[in-house]
Amino acid sequence: MSNNKESRRIFLKGSAALAGTGLMSAAISPAIAQEQGYVLNPPAITSMEVVGTSDRFPVRRVFCLGRNYRAHAIESGDNPDETPPFFFIKPRDAVVESRNGFPYPPMTNELRYEGEMVVALNSGGANISEADALSHVYAYGIGLDMTREDLQHEAQSLERPWAISKSFDNSAPCGPLYPVENHGHAIEGRIWLSVNGEIKQDSVLSLQRWSVSQGIAILSRHYELSAGDIIMTGTPEGIGLVEKGDVIRTGIDNLGEIEVRVI
Ligand code: MN
Image (tube, rainbow, N blue to C red; front, side, top):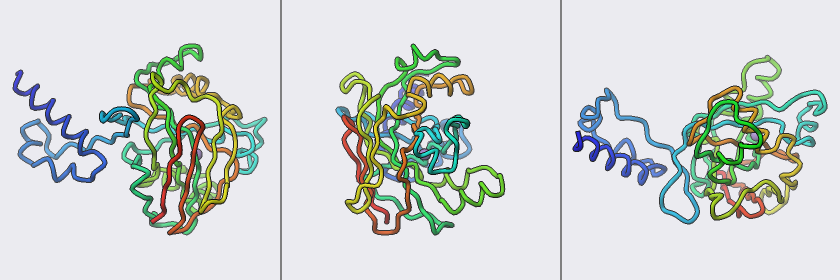
């Protein structure tokens, strides 16, 4: 028993170290998968870099909040006084390292950037109160909610789900996480995004229609939240398209900035 535990511990450590390198499947032989009681190699652990430690944050689920800034809701054709924000989900392995570049995805000619703050949870629960919500936050970071805009418009006009426009491979390039214990809560400050040096999005977190606390509380009524869940908290106005070769930079006060090259 203790041997199994030990080998599992080593396996998990190795997985974390290899996550993001693309070497996971090559690193686990079928013999090891079988030894662990799986018919296939287990999927790679998706994880995010954490500032101040070589240990990584393992991602469980990726929740995204839509239309969370009034001016962006208006530019998207919503009446922000009448329509509440809503949630959608990306697969966990949509989260990729921003520094590796963003491969222009297939099946689109209209690739859109959305700069967003990312909230990473280290605990969860159902029906979390607004007052308790921030106690579940492990860290904050910056991510891009990349969108195949032409497929989104098609889905909207046909009243179909957004999945293929939002939840495609690599659709959430993210930077490192800044733990609350060292960096505090990122609930105010500037959020901006530039393309090839030209500022496209420039807002402040305090203009979020649903704050981080409110977002966690609302989400926890629909899902029992868990350690490892991350929430992309919506994009301000100024969304637009990018092409191969463009360089996207996006920053949030106290969370640094990330650069994503479209390749
Ligand atoms: Mn978004």
